Each structure stands twice: as C-alpha cells, then as structure tokens.
Length: 410
Ligand code: HGY
Ligand code: MN
Ligand code: MN
Image (tube, rainbow, N blue to C red; front, side, top):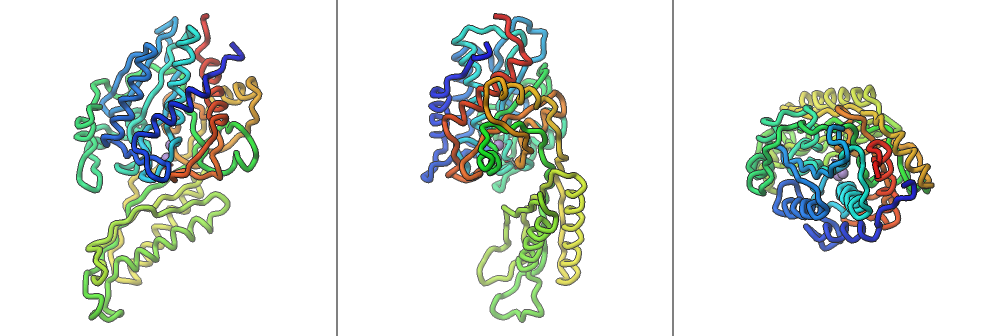
C-alpha cells in the first residue's frame, strides 16, 4: 500500500470540470457562497461522491459530508474537505483542490477495492471565503461551535438576503444537527496561496500553524454637503477620513514587521455621488499576524488611530471588531510529514497565511494541512495556477496522511 497513488489525470480533469461552474473570461471562477453557481458545484460534488458509493448528509448550516464506510463503523471518521465557494475574482484551485482531492481519494479507494478500518469522509464547508457573507470559515466555525447557528443564519449580504433563506433557496438547508459527525482526525489539502514553497522549490508544505485574523467594519459618519459650495474648513468628509484610516492600516502592518498584514478590501460610500461630500462610509479592515500579541498590538494601534481621526475631524468613527480568530497549531501535521517523506516529496514546515476550515476543525479533532505551491504565490486572482504534478503530489500526501490514521484492512 505504500506505493498506492491517486489518478492525477482524473483529479486534474475534475478540477477543470468544476472550474466551468462560474468560469470567468480571465480563466478564474466567480462562484460566491449560496448562489446558484455554488448550488451547481455542490450538486456535482454530491453526484461524484454518490457514483462511488458514498452516502451524503447535509447539516443545518449547509455543510455537506460524503461518507465511505470502513470495516469498523464505530471508529471516528478520518475526514478531509475544504470549500467550493470562491472570491469574486477567484481562481480554479482555492478550496476546490482540497474538495476534489477528497473525491479523488474516494475514487481511488473504490476502484482499488480497498477497505479502510475507519470510515472516510469528505466535506464541503459552507461559505469559507467570507466574501458574500461574513465572517470567513462560517460553516466550519458554526460546526465547531465558534459561531451560533441562529445568528449566522441571519447574516445578510449587501442586498439584504440572509444565509438561511439562501440555503433553502439552493436546497442545502440540511436537517442534520450541527457538530454531530463522529470524526477522529481532519486533513485539508490546499494551495499555499503565497510564494514560499515555489521560492524554496518544495513540493509539499507541512502546515504547522494557522495565523491569527481580526476583521472589522469601520463606519465613519460626517455630513453630506455640496462639493462646489462647501469651504474645506466646513466639511465633515467621511471618505477623506476613511482614506486616513486606510493608509494607517497599511502603516500598522508595515510597523509590525516581519509578518504584519493589513488590508481594506470592501467599502460602501454614501451617497456615492461625485459632487456630494460623502456623509458616511463603511469599510472593512483585515489584520493578520501569526503572533497573537503582535496582532493585539495592531488592534490597539488601529483603535487608537480611529479615535485620533474622530477628534481631529470632529466625526464619529465606529470600529466594529466582529471577528477574531486566534492563531492555531495543527497537531496532526506529523502525519503529513511522514506521508511526504514516505512518498519522497520535498517538503518544509510552513504557516498558513490564509484562514482555512481545518483551522476550526483543529478545535475538535487532531488536524493537519497539506500545502502545494501556486504559481508566483498568486491567489484570490483569476490567474491563480498550480500544475497537475503539484496537485497529484498534494493529493497523494493527503491520501497517505489519512490512511496512516484510518488504517487498511485489505
Ligand atoms: O480570508 C481568508 O484567509 C480565506 O481566504 N477565507
Ligand atoms: Mn481557501
Ligand atoms: Mn480563499
């Protein structure tokens, strides 16, 4: 069994097939959570898993679980999975690579007629991206009890549509109770989404830690008035104040070297008319760091600066810090390292810059992540690319990481 390998060509074909759902002109995918396109992707996943004899369950947050029985169904499942929702200018691989690696493992075990001791499960987690609905990793966060189901059901997108109604609309409001699966370990394969593995010329990343994340909505309230007849000294310009804060978000990241990260990616301006001074602005702030103390310091610097701007400009600045994800260690990573060594892939320890569903699964079971390189470290971009060989390597390491735990009967 030590040379058991997946079918890399079939995995690649499945990735290209899935990429047709929400395909964009630049070669990426725009498949936002709980849209009709997300439904199509979910349906295809279920179809593929059922075709190799799996049973499908869906829980009350729309998380999907495909299950392949082992010889001893009393054992906790060895699980893998990721997400099928993408960013608006997402690529073909973020999340999808992990889900379809799971599907490829089911297919390999099925065609080789392999019986594992423990059951094998492949999961699709609702709204990992946090683009249409916030926060990110919403489905896995509800599953492990970090978020309240009822509260997350009520989260709305910019058009006022809520998660629960959208789950009903696409047919994925399941009946299974949240957190009711019996699992013993969780592994996730994912492209690195950064440049390190490529720069270091390594085939596999053994992920030891998921870095901390803080998300905010900052709302600045000034006063609408005429762009042509309001003297500068009399303005209460919410957007000019927001520009100060957004520039400071970058400075906070740069001051907290080497790993400080700060981003504003979303903004709503009211009334958003070129000749009316904006009366109110709401924008996102995303701060990240692998060290919780540095991340707390960055949080403090942001809040202090917002107060200064509020006073200097005589505006109200509301900082809603609605999501904190503390750095998490992966304690099943040694299985990933053992598998990479057994298969002869070059590898290195690495920490995850992005958030992943495995980061929350680590709350409840031993979890590990397998990273593969992605071209120029680019992700959350339609040109996101990785090679069939890199996908094959990652999926093989995932397979053997899981079999290490699940055991094989025959
Ligand atoms: O935000 C993240 O890191 C992930 O892409 N949801
Ligand atoms: Mn992802
Ligand atoms: Mn992502």
